[in-house]
Length: 370
Image 1 (tube, rainbow, N blue to C red):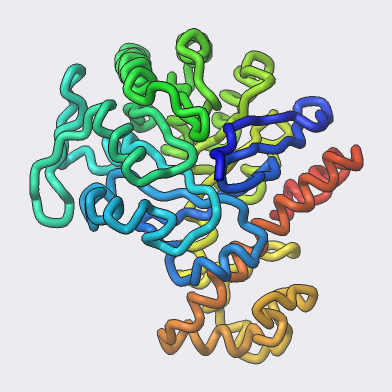
Image 2: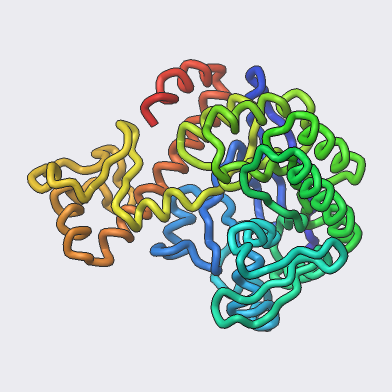
């Protein structure tokens, strides 16, 4: 069987909102799209077949965590990440750059070497260079790879953010060189620059000169408020390449997604629906439900009577409240599926309304509810 070339097409635009399709070797991805997060080769609390049944078209896994456990060679021995986790969907792997920030107490950054880590599991020393990050992702056989970058925490220190952005651009060029020519895979660059307009523009222009298959916006969802995030997207929406997918990393809430789609973003990922599902927060079309609250003890209505997938409409809030308050594992499993399904319903509705030319009405109806 011949391998299919990675490709992206914009089908329709409604002001800045875009309806599109990403063609991968493992199938077509309709955009705007939300990617459930399967950090360690699993979407926590859910079977991969059930994730597919929700309408999910691509998932995300994490290079850093898979490098530490179980190790790339073990996954390669099984034929790659898809075979290892029994997943037929396309997989995007992030580069480990976010862990450079989130595990900063356990590493140091060297411009030439990369990130020198001590494992958060057993203290073992690792070196994650731009080249090694690409090699690991190729070993995992992911469909979309991310360049190695440094993701700084929110800061008003211009020189600090500029230094970090310059480092990320240096690593991006090295990542592209290591990636080489892989027509059936894709490599995305990551725009950095914090909340500084000129740094964001400079970063994007540098990445465009290197030339990537897609462009991600990193360094957000790290402490800034929603307005600050949208201000960055407003800076970039008129200058991002039209013919390449745009990916907002690590975002976010349903209202974050709506606000980003209206500013031209095509791809999203976030742990929020699964993490919230495990802690008792359900997302619904009527807003959020904190299922542990005592007011649901005698509420025999379902989270959404119209959602019959997995028979979710047959479980009452009363019962779900009981499951969580007795620490039964079925509770987090059911809410995880509910939340992933809701996010995929949201993306489907977004795509439908862009296609029909009614997205602005849909946006105005739900931006303050969700």
